[in-house]
Length: 163
Image 1 (cartoon, rainbow, N blue to C red):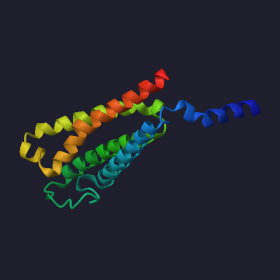
Image 2 (image 1 turned 135 degrees about the vertical axis):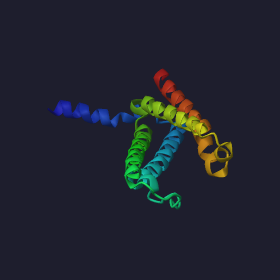
Image 3 (image 1 turned 90 degrees about the horizontal axis):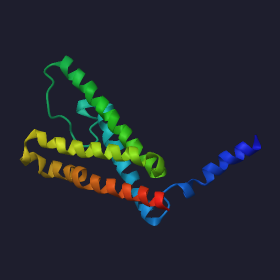
Image 4 (image 1 turned 180 degrees about the vertical axis):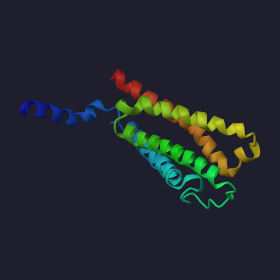
């Protein structure tokens, strides 16, 4: 019993030796993942808890009038579901910040989904809105920042495997 407990304890203690998140550059990656995860969780909970009208954490949501309450409630439920999915992505950022080896590949899939979401914005066919100050920052993060983060994670995982 003591030997198995000692073995389990040593596996926790040696996590920094196994985790690719130990160098200075990796610490920067950890900070980026934690900040991105916090932002994603904030925006996700705004929608997951508030639905279409949101909790109002990102500004006033009084931009429409409900004309069909039944249809609104159905779409509101779907919106809350998507907010919950987004929250799961944010939690994955946190998990990867602490164990990139275990969660890095899953996070890269989520990052690919974020890029797809950014590309989906183009289906609105409103370049005046898409490139406005209200959307352009998000679009740049989704189509430029996220791919850069994907490659940074890929490099960190690759360098860990070759070490």
